Image (tube, rainbow, N blue to C red):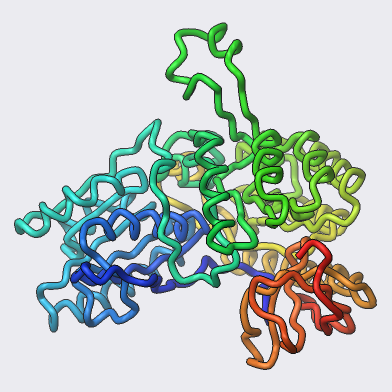
Length: 482
Protein backbone atom coordinates (compact mmCIF):
# COMPACT_ATOMS: atom_id res chain seq x y z
CA UNK A 1 0.00 0.00 0.00
CA UNK A 2 1.21 3.51 -0.77
CA UNK A 3 -0.41 5.06 2.29
CA UNK A 4 -0.93 3.41 5.65
CA UNK A 5 -4.28 3.69 7.33
CA UNK A 6 -2.76 3.11 10.73
CA UNK A 7 0.08 5.40 11.65
CA UNK A 8 2.85 3.92 13.68
CA UNK A 9 5.20 6.82 14.38
CA UNK A 10 7.49 7.43 11.41
CA UNK A 11 10.29 4.95 11.71
CA UNK A 12 13.88 6.14 11.83
CA UNK A 13 15.11 7.79 8.68
CA UNK A 14 18.78 8.66 8.31
CA UNK A 15 18.74 12.03 6.64
CA UNK A 16 21.33 13.35 4.21
CA UNK A 17 21.96 16.49 2.17
CA UNK A 18 24.62 17.57 -0.30
CA UNK A 19 27.73 18.51 1.67
CA UNK A 20 30.11 21.44 1.78
CA UNK A 21 33.57 20.46 0.55
CA UNK A 22 35.34 22.33 3.37
CA UNK A 23 33.44 20.37 6.03
CA UNK A 24 35.42 17.34 7.15
CA UNK A 25 33.34 15.90 9.98
CA UNK A 26 30.43 13.51 9.43
CA UNK A 27 26.98 13.74 11.02
CA UNK A 28 24.57 10.80 11.06
CA UNK A 29 21.14 12.02 12.15
CA UNK A 30 18.10 9.78 12.49
CA UNK A 31 14.56 10.92 13.25
CA UNK A 32 11.52 9.23 14.76
CA UNK A 33 7.95 10.26 15.47
CA UNK A 34 6.03 13.28 14.29
CA UNK A 35 6.62 15.63 11.37
CA UNK A 36 7.89 18.26 13.81
CA UNK A 37 10.83 16.02 14.72
CA UNK A 38 11.81 15.67 11.07
CA UNK A 39 11.53 19.43 10.65
CA UNK A 40 13.69 19.96 13.77
CA UNK A 41 16.36 17.64 12.37
CA UNK A 42 16.66 19.98 9.38
CA UNK A 43 17.28 22.87 11.79
CA UNK A 44 19.93 20.84 13.63
CA UNK A 45 21.68 19.96 10.35
CA UNK A 46 21.74 23.66 9.43
CA UNK A 47 23.34 24.60 12.75
CA UNK A 48 25.93 21.82 12.51
CA UNK A 49 26.74 22.59 8.88
CA UNK A 50 28.25 25.82 10.17
CA UNK A 51 30.27 23.76 12.66
CA UNK A 52 32.02 21.75 9.94
CA UNK A 53 29.65 18.77 9.65
CA UNK A 54 28.29 17.17 6.49
CA UNK A 55 25.55 14.57 6.79
CA UNK A 56 26.12 10.91 5.97
CA UNK A 57 23.95 7.80 5.68
CA UNK A 58 26.85 5.59 6.71
CA UNK A 59 26.70 5.13 10.48
CA UNK A 60 30.15 3.54 10.65
CA UNK A 61 31.93 6.65 9.29
CA UNK A 62 30.10 9.16 11.51
CA UNK A 63 31.94 11.42 13.96
CA UNK A 64 28.65 12.44 15.55
CA UNK A 65 25.46 10.39 15.75
CA UNK A 66 22.21 12.09 16.76
CA UNK A 67 18.77 10.54 17.16
CA UNK A 68 15.75 12.83 17.26
CA UNK A 69 13.24 11.14 19.51
CA UNK A 70 9.54 10.83 20.27
CA UNK A 71 7.90 10.26 23.67
CA UNK A 72 4.28 10.20 22.57
CA UNK A 73 3.97 6.41 23.02
CA UNK A 74 5.94 3.74 24.82
CA UNK A 75 6.59 1.83 21.58
CA UNK A 76 8.39 4.83 20.12
CA UNK A 77 10.67 5.06 23.15
CA UNK A 78 11.50 1.35 23.04
CA UNK A 79 12.41 1.62 19.35
CA UNK A 80 14.83 4.46 20.10
CA UNK A 81 16.42 2.51 22.96
CA UNK A 82 17.18 -0.36 20.59
CA UNK A 83 18.79 2.08 18.17
CA UNK A 84 20.95 3.52 20.95
CA UNK A 85 22.17 0.00 21.75
CA UNK A 86 23.13 -0.39 18.08
CA UNK A 87 24.93 2.97 18.04
CA UNK A 88 26.96 1.98 21.08
CA UNK A 89 27.92 -1.33 19.47
CA UNK A 90 29.36 0.69 16.57
CA UNK A 91 30.96 3.09 19.03
CA UNK A 92 32.98 0.25 20.56
CA UNK A 93 34.60 -0.20 17.13
CA UNK A 94 34.90 3.56 16.57
CA UNK A 95 35.53 5.03 20.06
CA UNK A 96 35.94 8.54 18.68
CA UNK A 97 32.28 8.62 17.66
CA UNK A 98 29.98 10.69 19.88
CA UNK A 99 26.29 9.89 20.43
CA UNK A 100 23.57 12.37 21.31
CA UNK A 101 19.83 12.29 21.91
CA UNK A 102 17.63 15.15 20.73
CA UNK A 103 13.99 16.04 21.15
CA UNK A 104 11.17 14.98 23.43
CA UNK A 105 12.72 11.81 24.83
CA UNK A 106 15.90 13.74 25.62
CA UNK A 107 14.01 16.15 27.85
CA UNK A 108 12.12 13.39 29.65
CA UNK A 109 14.97 10.91 30.22
CA UNK A 110 18.05 13.11 30.53
CA UNK A 111 19.25 11.63 33.85
CA UNK A 112 18.79 8.03 32.75
CA UNK A 113 20.66 8.53 29.49
CA UNK A 114 23.62 10.44 30.92
CA UNK A 115 24.07 9.30 34.50
CA UNK A 116 22.34 5.98 35.11
CA UNK A 117 22.69 4.12 31.82
CA UNK A 118 25.61 6.17 30.39
CA UNK A 119 24.58 5.37 26.82
CA UNK A 120 25.01 8.86 25.33
CA UNK A 121 27.47 11.73 25.47
CA UNK A 122 25.00 14.54 24.90
CA UNK A 123 21.31 15.29 25.60
CA UNK A 124 19.64 18.23 23.87
CA UNK A 125 16.02 19.31 24.30
CA UNK A 126 13.83 20.75 21.53
CA UNK A 127 14.50 24.38 22.48
CA UNK A 128 18.28 24.07 22.90
CA UNK A 129 19.54 23.32 19.39
CA UNK A 130 21.30 26.69 19.08
CA UNK A 131 23.44 25.61 22.04
CA UNK A 132 24.80 22.63 20.08
CA UNK A 133 28.20 24.28 19.33
CA UNK A 134 28.79 24.82 23.07
CA UNK A 135 27.58 21.33 23.95
CA UNK A 136 29.87 19.77 21.34
CA UNK A 137 32.82 21.58 22.90
CA UNK A 138 31.84 20.11 26.28
CA UNK A 139 31.80 16.64 24.73
CA UNK A 140 35.14 17.17 22.99
CA UNK A 141 36.61 18.21 26.34
CA UNK A 142 35.50 14.87 27.77
CA UNK A 143 32.46 16.05 29.69
CA UNK A 144 28.85 14.98 29.37
CA UNK A 145 26.75 17.76 27.88
CA UNK A 146 23.09 18.50 28.57
CA UNK A 147 20.68 21.33 27.84
CA UNK A 148 16.97 20.59 28.10
CA UNK A 149 15.82 24.04 29.17
CA UNK A 150 12.46 24.91 27.64
CA UNK A 151 11.98 28.35 26.14
CA UNK A 152 8.95 30.64 25.96
CA UNK A 153 10.41 32.44 22.96
CA UNK A 154 12.50 30.14 20.71
CA UNK A 155 10.93 29.47 17.30
CA UNK A 156 14.10 29.02 15.16
CA UNK A 157 12.54 31.49 12.76
CA UNK A 158 15.99 32.96 12.06
CA UNK A 159 17.49 29.64 10.89
CA UNK A 160 17.11 28.43 7.31
CA UNK A 161 16.63 24.65 7.63
CA UNK A 162 18.78 22.32 5.57
CA UNK A 163 16.35 20.15 3.61
CA UNK A 164 17.36 16.60 4.47
CA UNK A 165 16.45 13.65 2.31
CA UNK A 166 12.96 14.29 1.01
CA UNK A 167 11.94 14.50 -2.61
CA UNK A 168 12.75 18.10 -3.50
CA UNK A 169 9.03 18.62 -4.14
CA UNK A 170 7.39 18.92 -0.70
CA UNK A 171 8.68 20.53 2.49
CA UNK A 172 7.60 21.38 6.04
CA UNK A 173 7.61 24.93 7.41
CA UNK A 174 7.24 25.25 11.18
CA UNK A 175 4.87 28.05 12.28
CA UNK A 176 4.43 27.30 16.00
CA UNK A 177 6.25 25.38 18.71
CA UNK A 178 4.96 23.85 21.94
CA UNK A 179 1.38 23.48 23.12
CA UNK A 180 -0.81 25.00 25.83
CA UNK A 181 -3.73 22.57 25.63
CA UNK A 182 -2.70 20.18 28.42
CA UNK A 183 -4.60 17.13 27.16
CA UNK A 184 -4.25 14.63 29.99
CA UNK A 185 -2.76 11.87 27.80
CA UNK A 186 -0.11 14.03 26.10
CA UNK A 187 3.54 14.71 26.97
CA UNK A 188 4.05 17.53 24.45
CA UNK A 189 3.52 20.47 26.87
CA UNK A 190 6.16 18.96 29.15
CA UNK A 191 8.69 18.03 26.45
CA UNK A 192 8.22 20.95 24.03
CA UNK A 193 7.05 23.68 26.39
CA UNK A 194 4.55 26.49 26.08
CA UNK A 195 3.05 27.47 22.77
CA UNK A 196 4.60 30.32 20.78
CA UNK A 197 4.10 31.55 17.24
CA UNK A 198 6.65 32.57 14.66
CA UNK A 199 6.82 35.93 12.88
CA UNK A 200 4.61 35.62 9.76
CA UNK A 201 7.11 37.45 7.57
CA UNK A 202 9.80 34.88 8.37
CA UNK A 203 7.33 32.14 7.43
CA UNK A 204 6.48 33.80 4.10
CA UNK A 205 10.20 34.35 3.43
CA UNK A 206 10.91 30.65 4.00
CA UNK A 207 8.05 29.64 1.69
CA UNK A 208 9.32 32.05 -0.99
CA UNK A 209 12.81 30.58 -0.67
CA UNK A 210 11.43 27.06 -1.10
CA UNK A 211 9.55 28.15 -4.22
CA UNK A 212 12.75 29.63 -5.68
CA UNK A 213 14.46 26.28 -5.05
CA UNK A 214 11.78 24.43 -7.00
CA UNK A 215 9.55 23.07 -4.23
CA UNK A 216 5.90 22.73 -5.24
CA UNK A 217 4.17 22.12 -1.89
CA UNK A 218 4.63 23.22 1.72
CA UNK A 219 2.95 22.01 4.90
CA UNK A 220 2.61 24.64 7.63
CA UNK A 221 3.46 22.73 10.76
CA UNK A 222 2.64 23.04 14.45
CA UNK A 223 1.29 21.07 17.37
CA UNK A 224 -1.88 23.16 17.01
CA UNK A 225 -1.78 25.41 13.94
CA UNK A 226 -5.23 26.94 14.52
CA UNK A 227 -4.07 28.72 17.68
CA UNK A 228 -1.32 30.51 15.72
CA UNK A 229 -1.33 34.18 16.74
CA UNK A 230 1.29 36.84 16.11
CA UNK A 231 0.95 40.41 17.34
CA UNK A 232 2.41 43.17 15.18
CA UNK A 233 4.46 44.49 18.08
CA UNK A 234 5.97 41.10 18.91
CA UNK A 235 5.22 38.30 21.35
CA UNK A 236 2.63 38.57 24.13
CA UNK A 237 5.42 39.07 26.67
CA UNK A 238 6.53 42.25 24.87
CA UNK A 239 3.34 44.13 25.78
CA UNK A 240 2.86 45.97 29.07
CA UNK A 241 -0.85 45.17 29.35
CA UNK A 242 -3.86 43.70 27.54
CA UNK A 243 -4.97 47.10 26.21
CA UNK A 244 -1.61 47.69 24.54
CA UNK A 245 -1.73 44.21 23.05
CA UNK A 246 -5.25 44.73 21.67
CA UNK A 247 -4.10 47.85 19.81
CA UNK A 248 -1.44 45.89 17.96
CA UNK A 249 -2.18 44.30 14.61
CA UNK A 250 -2.72 40.58 15.09
CA UNK A 251 -2.18 37.83 12.52
CA UNK A 252 -4.21 34.71 13.23
CA UNK A 253 -4.01 31.40 11.40
CA UNK A 254 -6.54 32.24 8.69
CA UNK A 255 -4.66 35.48 7.96
CA UNK A 256 -1.38 33.56 7.79
CA UNK A 257 -2.93 31.09 5.35
CA UNK A 258 -4.00 34.01 3.15
CA UNK A 259 -0.51 35.53 3.27
CA UNK A 260 1.20 32.30 2.25
CA UNK A 261 -1.37 31.41 -0.43
CA UNK A 262 -1.11 34.87 -1.99
CA UNK A 263 2.70 34.92 -1.82
CA UNK A 264 2.97 31.70 -3.86
CA UNK A 265 -0.26 31.09 -5.81
CA UNK A 266 1.39 28.34 -7.86
CA UNK A 267 2.45 26.35 -4.79
CA UNK A 268 0.25 23.88 -2.93
CA UNK A 269 -0.34 24.78 0.74
CA UNK A 270 -1.22 22.24 3.45
CA UNK A 271 -1.25 22.48 7.24
CA UNK A 272 -1.14 20.17 10.24
CA UNK A 273 -2.26 19.66 12.96
CA UNK A 274 -5.64 21.26 13.72
CA UNK A 275 -7.44 21.17 17.05
CA UNK A 276 -11.26 21.03 16.97
CA UNK A 277 -11.59 23.55 19.80
CA UNK A 278 -9.56 26.16 17.92
CA UNK A 279 -10.49 25.69 14.26
CA UNK A 280 -12.65 28.62 13.18
CA UNK A 281 -14.91 29.20 10.22
CA UNK A 282 -12.59 31.87 8.78
CA UNK A 283 -9.95 29.16 8.18
CA UNK A 284 -12.47 27.18 6.12
CA UNK A 285 -13.39 30.28 4.12
CA UNK A 286 -9.71 31.04 3.48
CA UNK A 287 -9.35 27.50 2.12
CA UNK A 288 -12.36 27.95 -0.12
CA UNK A 289 -11.03 31.26 -1.52
CA UNK A 290 -7.63 29.91 -2.58
CA UNK A 291 -7.37 27.00 -4.98
CA UNK A 292 -3.78 26.35 -3.93
CA UNK A 293 -4.76 25.63 -0.29
CA UNK A 294 -5.44 21.90 -0.37
CA UNK A 295 -8.86 20.65 0.67
CA UNK A 296 -7.60 18.45 3.47
CA UNK A 297 -7.79 18.79 7.26
CA UNK A 298 -6.23 16.52 9.86
CA UNK A 299 -8.76 16.95 12.67
CA UNK A 300 -7.94 14.70 15.66
CA UNK A 301 -10.90 13.82 17.85
CA UNK A 302 -9.31 11.10 20.06
CA UNK A 303 -12.72 9.76 21.22
CA UNK A 304 -16.36 9.94 20.22
CA UNK A 305 -17.55 10.09 23.84
CA UNK A 306 -18.10 13.44 25.57
CA UNK A 307 -17.38 11.75 28.90
CA UNK A 308 -13.98 10.51 27.69
CA UNK A 309 -13.22 13.83 25.97
CA UNK A 310 -13.77 15.56 29.30
CA UNK A 311 -11.42 13.12 31.03
CA UNK A 312 -8.86 13.84 28.30
CA UNK A 313 -9.28 17.59 28.93
CA UNK A 314 -10.27 18.11 25.32
CA UNK A 315 -12.08 21.44 25.13
CA UNK A 316 -14.92 20.26 22.90
CA UNK A 317 -17.84 17.85 23.13
CA UNK A 318 -19.03 15.16 20.75
CA UNK A 319 -21.84 17.47 19.61
CA UNK A 320 -19.48 20.41 18.99
CA UNK A 321 -17.26 18.17 16.89
CA UNK A 322 -20.28 17.14 14.80
CA UNK A 323 -21.11 20.83 14.28
CA UNK A 324 -17.57 21.51 13.08
CA UNK A 325 -17.68 18.56 10.67
CA UNK A 326 -21.00 19.83 9.30
CA UNK A 327 -19.46 23.27 8.77
CA UNK A 328 -16.48 21.76 6.93
CA UNK A 329 -18.81 19.77 4.66
CA UNK A 330 -20.92 22.89 4.00
CA UNK A 331 -18.02 25.21 3.09
CA UNK A 332 -15.65 22.60 1.58
CA UNK A 333 -17.84 19.78 0.23
CA UNK A 334 -14.93 17.78 -1.22
CA UNK A 335 -12.58 18.20 1.75
CA UNK A 336 -10.60 15.17 2.92
CA UNK A 337 -10.64 14.67 6.70
CA UNK A 338 -8.43 12.40 8.80
CA UNK A 339 -8.41 11.55 12.49
CA UNK A 340 -6.38 10.53 15.54
CA UNK A 341 -8.11 8.00 17.81
CA UNK A 342 -7.15 6.46 21.14
CA UNK A 343 -8.68 3.11 22.16
CA UNK A 344 -8.95 2.18 25.83
CA UNK A 345 -8.42 5.50 27.60
CA UNK A 346 -8.81 5.14 31.40
CA UNK A 347 -12.45 4.81 32.38
CA UNK A 348 -13.67 4.21 28.82
CA UNK A 349 -16.83 2.10 28.95
CA UNK A 350 -18.25 -0.07 26.21
CA UNK A 351 -20.85 2.64 25.64
CA UNK A 352 -18.05 5.21 25.20
CA UNK A 353 -16.40 2.93 22.65
CA UNK A 354 -19.67 2.61 20.74
CA UNK A 355 -19.87 6.42 20.73
CA UNK A 356 -16.48 6.46 19.00
CA UNK A 357 -17.65 3.99 16.37
CA UNK A 358 -20.87 5.95 15.74
CA UNK A 359 -18.90 9.20 15.39
CA UNK A 360 -16.66 7.51 12.82
CA UNK A 361 -19.74 6.30 10.97
CA UNK A 362 -21.06 9.87 10.87
CA UNK A 363 -17.83 11.44 9.58
CA UNK A 364 -16.51 8.60 7.39
CA UNK A 365 -12.90 9.74 7.61
CA UNK A 366 -10.61 9.38 4.62
CA UNK A 367 -7.94 7.79 6.81
CA UNK A 368 -6.78 7.81 10.40
CA UNK A 369 -4.04 7.31 12.94
CA UNK A 370 -5.18 4.88 15.63
CA UNK A 371 -3.54 3.60 18.78
CA UNK A 372 -4.15 1.81 22.05
CA UNK A 373 -3.76 4.08 25.06
CA UNK A 374 -0.33 3.84 26.66
CA UNK A 375 0.36 5.64 29.92
CA UNK A 376 3.04 8.32 29.55
CA UNK A 377 4.96 9.24 32.72
CA UNK A 378 4.45 12.82 33.84
CA UNK A 379 1.10 13.35 32.16
CA UNK A 380 -2.02 14.23 34.14
CA UNK A 381 -3.61 10.90 33.13
CA UNK A 382 -0.64 9.00 34.55
CA UNK A 383 -0.81 10.99 37.79
CA UNK A 384 -4.56 11.04 38.32
CA UNK A 385 -6.18 8.20 36.36
CA UNK A 386 -5.84 4.45 36.72
CA UNK A 387 -4.98 2.64 33.49
CA UNK A 388 -7.90 0.31 34.14
CA UNK A 389 -8.75 -1.10 30.70
CA UNK A 390 -7.29 -4.62 30.22
CA UNK A 391 -4.97 -5.00 27.25
CA UNK A 392 -7.17 -7.57 25.53
CA UNK A 393 -10.12 -5.14 25.63
CA UNK A 394 -7.93 -2.31 24.30
CA UNK A 395 -6.81 -4.55 21.44
CA UNK A 396 -10.35 -5.60 20.59
CA UNK A 397 -11.61 -2.02 20.59
CA UNK A 398 -8.65 -0.87 18.48
CA UNK A 399 -9.33 -3.65 15.98
CA UNK A 400 -12.96 -2.55 15.68
CA UNK A 401 -11.86 1.05 15.11
CA UNK A 402 -9.34 -0.03 12.46
CA UNK A 403 -11.88 -2.23 10.69
CA UNK A 404 -14.36 0.64 10.52
CA UNK A 405 -11.68 3.01 9.21
CA UNK A 406 -10.70 0.52 6.52
CA UNK A 407 -14.33 0.40 5.39
CA UNK A 408 -14.57 4.19 5.28
CA UNK A 409 -11.20 4.59 3.54
CA UNK A 410 -12.38 2.20 0.82
CA UNK A 411 -15.61 4.21 0.54
CA UNK A 412 -13.73 7.52 0.17
CA UNK A 413 -11.23 6.31 -2.44
CA UNK A 414 -14.04 4.71 -4.45
CA UNK A 415 -15.64 8.15 -4.84
CA UNK A 416 -12.73 9.19 -7.08
CA UNK A 417 -13.06 6.30 -9.53
CA UNK A 418 -14.15 7.72 -12.90
CA UNK A 419 -13.00 11.23 -11.97
CA UNK A 420 -9.99 13.12 -13.33
CA UNK A 421 -8.04 14.62 -10.44
CA UNK A 422 -4.96 16.80 -10.04
CA UNK A 423 -1.91 14.93 -8.71
CA UNK A 424 1.41 16.43 -7.64
CA UNK A 425 4.10 13.87 -8.53
CA UNK A 426 6.39 13.31 -5.54
CA UNK A 427 8.40 10.14 -6.22
CA UNK A 428 8.44 6.69 -7.75
CA UNK A 429 5.81 4.25 -6.56
CA UNK A 430 7.11 1.96 -3.83
CA UNK A 431 5.77 -1.05 -5.70
CA UNK A 432 6.84 -0.25 -9.26
CA UNK A 433 9.64 1.82 -10.73
CA UNK A 434 7.48 2.18 -13.87
CA UNK A 435 4.91 4.26 -11.95
CA UNK A 436 4.83 7.67 -10.31
CA UNK A 437 3.28 8.32 -6.92
CA UNK A 438 1.71 11.56 -5.77
CA UNK A 439 -1.26 12.97 -3.87
CA UNK A 440 -4.44 14.77 -4.77
CA UNK A 441 -5.59 17.88 -2.83
CA UNK A 442 -7.48 15.62 -0.38
CA UNK A 443 -4.14 13.93 0.51
CA UNK A 444 -5.05 10.60 -1.08
CA UNK A 445 -2.15 8.81 -2.77
CA UNK A 446 -2.40 8.02 -6.49
CA UNK A 447 -0.14 5.90 -8.74
CA UNK A 448 0.02 5.96 -12.53
CA UNK A 449 2.43 5.05 -15.38
CA UNK A 450 5.43 7.36 -15.69
CA UNK A 451 5.25 8.31 -19.37
CA UNK A 452 7.07 11.65 -19.88
CA UNK A 453 6.37 13.28 -16.53
CA UNK A 454 8.74 14.00 -13.63
CA UNK A 455 8.61 14.74 -9.88
CA UNK A 456 7.19 18.19 -9.23
CA UNK A 457 4.79 18.09 -12.17
CA UNK A 458 1.11 18.77 -11.53
CA UNK A 459 -0.69 16.21 -13.65
CA UNK A 460 -4.35 15.46 -14.35
CA UNK A 461 -4.95 11.76 -13.75
CA UNK A 462 -8.00 9.75 -14.76
CA UNK A 463 -8.78 7.38 -11.87
CA UNK A 464 -9.73 3.91 -13.14
CA UNK A 465 -9.44 1.81 -9.98
CA UNK A 466 -8.52 2.00 -6.32
CA UNK A 467 -7.63 0.13 -3.16
CA UNK A 468 -8.75 1.31 0.27
CA UNK A 469 -5.74 3.63 0.42
CA UNK A 470 -4.53 4.28 -3.12
CA UNK A 471 -5.97 5.63 -6.37
CA UNK A 472 -4.88 3.90 -9.59
CA UNK A 473 -5.07 5.72 -12.90
CA UNK A 474 -3.43 7.16 -15.99
CA UNK A 475 -2.19 10.68 -16.75
CA UNK A 476 -4.17 12.63 -19.35
CA UNK A 477 -2.10 15.82 -19.37
CA UNK A 478 -0.62 18.59 -17.28
CA UNK A 479 -2.74 20.63 -14.86
CA UNK A 480 -3.63 24.02 -16.32
CA UNK A 481 -1.95 25.82 -13.42
CA UNK A 482 1.35 23.92 -13.89
